Image 1 (cartoon, rainbow, N blue to C red):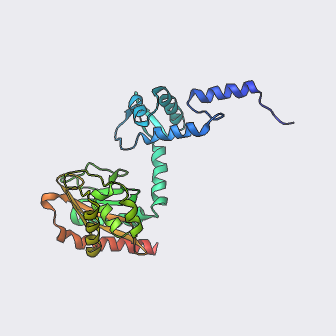
Image 2 (image 1 turned 30 degrees about the horizontal axis):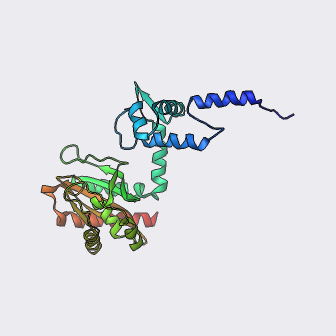
Length: 271
């Protein structure tokens, strides 16, 4: 005998789901999109955040944000800290898995060499990958004292403003460079390169030298040098060193950085 659910019971169940912001019967896609908008609203936030601000960042009514947060909290994707919310360790676990799979094991292969590079330089060391028009920071090591950046793992930065982005694009296919240049180049400081022709010239120099440089183009007072991590001759990421602009020594850092990027490239090839 086949069990059946009465229309009345279906409506009760739908009312229960609607109460937490999930319209599973009539329009499940809308609720999923709204939940994803809400999760994305946590991007770049490094502190617990209130419902009102999350709703504003997600472009949702406060009542909808509150219902969705209750559902996400029940699923252990967010956690409540007083009246505010933050992403949970469950969300971190999922993100960490994506980092390894999406980035083809780059982080695992690169990490020992990043540690050696940090030990040699005692400067900020970063590993990044291009995603769209931005560089996503995959790993970062920094000294206890001295120069530090405001960026952290998971942050996104305009590729044209970073040595990481320049190093990756310099060793990318011309079609990838052309696609990147379809959009206006972002400025982070007065020194950021926003002229496409000048930017292409920077990429040509980077290809010739094997390293890319930015001088106070992303953060005023900080400068970076980066070298690509290659797979079959194309960059899938880059590693960089950041110092105070007043102490930046491109020649001294370039050779060490090239060696490390070559080691990471070889480690990936052997994996």
